[in-house]
Image (cartoon, rainbow, N blue to C red; front, side, top):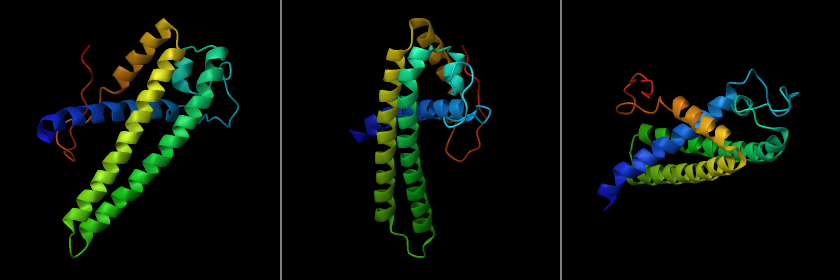
Amino acid sequence: MWKTLKPYVLVASVALNAAFVAIWLAHAASTGATASEPPDKGGVWCPLHRQLDVTAEQWAVIEPRLIAFQKSVGQLRRQIDDMRAEVIEMLADETTDLDAIRARQDDINAVRQTIQAKMVDHLLAEKDTLAPDQRERFFKLLRDRTACGTQGPPMSGGACRKAER
């Protein structure tokens, strides 16, 4: 059963991670603006939400949720980074314990699933907060920004292909 589900789980994992990266990049792409800096354009410091022209009322709902989401997912990403470092150390050891490595990989995948679940919840909450025209632009931006998903085998250096729409 796992063999038949594995491709679907992999595709879902890549898609959700791409969505997470797109939102993170949208936030990081700002010109150094953060929640602690003076906001511009009506108090909206997030470039994605500025692009969507969210209202002050929408931003009052979105901002606390966005900050909590970023903090929560940031902690989980650091946890994954730490576990990846552990796997590298396990691989580098003179004696390789394949069972321990696979167990740590399972731990990493469990945290990734947690991130993906948080991402889905966050996107659904965003969707509910936005007006229909904003929703349409929001998902178009996500689609455009995630057009550079993983291409080819891992560590292949595959080039990014633009989404064909």
